[in-house]
Length: 307
Image (cartoon, rainbow, N blue to C red):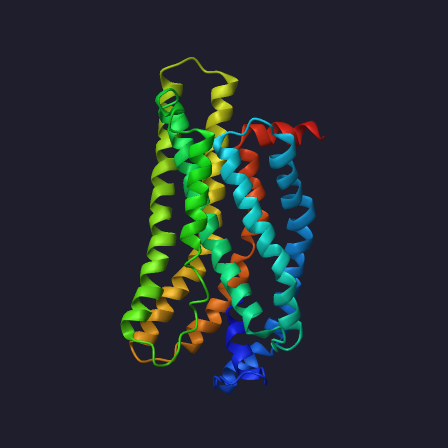
C-alpha cells in the first residue's frame, strides 16, 4: 500500500507521469523485507482473518442474530470493512512479490491505497461508536434506550462511511502542492480521524470501568457483575492495544513525515518507516474478532453455541 502509488509512477511504462526516487528507496522496495517478508505477513493475515474469523463473524451477524442491537450493527459494518480490505490484499501481495512492480494500472493502485485508509479510519470511527454505545448502556441504561435504537445506529454507520469517502491516497502529493495542502492533509485528517476518536475511547472506557466498579461497591457481589467488569477491562485493553499497535505508528509517522517535508527534507527515511507501520497496521483485521467476542453478548452466545 502507499508504496504502490510511488512505484507505479516510476515503473509503469504506459503512464506519462514519472516520479524519480532515490537508489535507497529502490533498494528498499526491491529488498528482502518488502518482496518476501511483508507479502508473507499479508498472506498470513488472509489465511487467519478471512475464512476462520471475519467470514464467520459476518455470517453470525447477518444470519444468526435476528434482533440486532446497536453494538452488533457497528460490528457488522466493521467486519465488512475488514473483509473488503482482505479481498484486495492479493493485489498488494502480487505487487511486492513482483519486485515492487505495479502492473494493474493507476485506477487499481488508487483503489488499493484508498481501501487501506478507509479500513484504518473507518475501523477507528466504528470502534469509537462502539465505545460510546457501551458507555451509554452502562452509565444510562434506561435513559439511553431511545438513543441506542437500531435505526439510529444504522444512520451513524452511514455517516461513518460518508466521512471515509474523502480519505483517499494522500500519502503522495505532487511536488508543486502548496504547503497549506500538506498541512491540511497530513495534520488535520489524522487529528480528526485518529487522535479525537482515541480521546473519546479513552474517556468512554475509563468511565465504563469506573461506573462498573462503583456499582460493585454499592451492591452485593455477584458473578454477573464480576464478569461485566472483566469483559469491560478486556475490551478496553483490546481496543487500546489495537490503537497502539495498528493505528498509532502509521498516524505518528504520517505526522512526522509532514513535518520533515515542511522543513525541506525529502522525508524518505520516515516514509520507509511508514511503510513498515502500514504493514503492521494491517493486523487489525484479525484483532477485531476479539472485540466482537467481548463487545457483544449476542455474538458471544452464538459463537459459544457452535462449540
